[in-house]
Image (cartoon, rainbow, N blue to C red):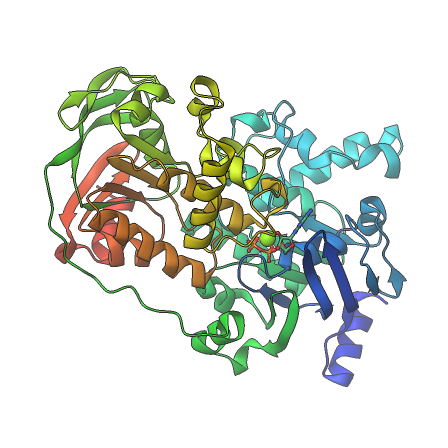
Length: 506
Ligand SMILES: Nc1ncnc2c1ncn2[C@@H]1O[C@H](COP(=O)(O)OP(=O)(O)OP(=O)(O)O)[C@@H](O)[C@H]1O
Ligand SMILES: [Mg+2]
């Protein structure tokens, strides 16, 4: 059927065509029933948002549509063809997927990454140039600012994400599946992605979209499918739903709003003075006091993660100083930073912070340094006790503390990294996008946790691109743009408008 026939068929029935059908899907992993008799379908020319809390089964369903796993029971068909555990086949029948934890090959160029895995099997050598052309077209559509010859490893996470999207749409696909595609994108980049999605929807692609941001879901989705604990809760047109109803479907309970609170603020614990790093950080000075939450706002690429890396000693700086409780911290030395009482939960948790082959327990109780210096000092019993306590405190969804951390869902991996720092009790904790990829229920739990840490006297530097998070938690708000601090304001003056204007101008 060509596009015209499809359009007239759709007009005749007034029902969009269903391209992908998943029926009665069951999938279990050791100790977990990840999907329990789930029905799901994707319609041409529609965006279906797949929603649910961390560990609900979204990525598992997506991996089956991409041919990574076969269901234990049930069947997935695309235009009548049954999928098996064969990614090449899934791709061939027209399913393009952007996975939650996908990575580009850092040592290959942007263009090579887009073409990766395509041309040798589907096209003869003669078509390499044609493939390259298509790669460039896809890139121009999604990320016109990128040079196709840049090595992927040099790109920011946001740009890498855009390249993955270009890769997914560089071939004619029937279904485009995106597992949390917006988590490392800035608002303008999300707008660009959404206009690409609109274009693809108009061309009759069936689109599946996972996001923990309901604003995005209400902007882009036509229908919503909700999973909870591996079960299908329902599929509804977005026009029938409001935020509260979606949250009720996802969570099955009320989610508490964070109340703005005032805490006693103590002595300065972190003092950053005139920090400079060529082309990255420009004369950065600020302080964080005990019990204080300092929000750090700004767009992706403003230099906030670079600042965190400099304070924590992962990167060096050219001039300036970092002090903890009045004592200067040696630069470019994470061991010295940790020793001085600085903790960091980095943005790119899976790459930087987790040792994926180790268990949840080991990841909680070992920091990289303990790993080297004090290996063996924790008794297994104590280790287990600490890990179990934190797993309960953060409601980490894992079959046991011995489970490999790499088998947890994305959001639950992030909770494990947070848990590690809670066991160490630093004087100042830097949180870089702590609720990125975390579901609505867990978000409010993490907000509570941040407040609890501040109440206990920890100083918190909260880097976040989420205005509601910054506004509801911060005692003071700093805004960064192009490597400098462009605003510092008390909570009372901080609004969406004042923050955005400092983030984009000035
Ligand atoms: N390879 C695996 N081995 C063992 N357990 C797994 C594996 N993959 C997923 N699971 C488990 O299956 C359940 C569903 O995980 P899934 O990744 O589908 O969740 P999700 O809805 O994508 O969550 P998130 O929003 O946190 O990404 C979780 O309990 C997870 O720990
Ligand atoms: Mg997931």
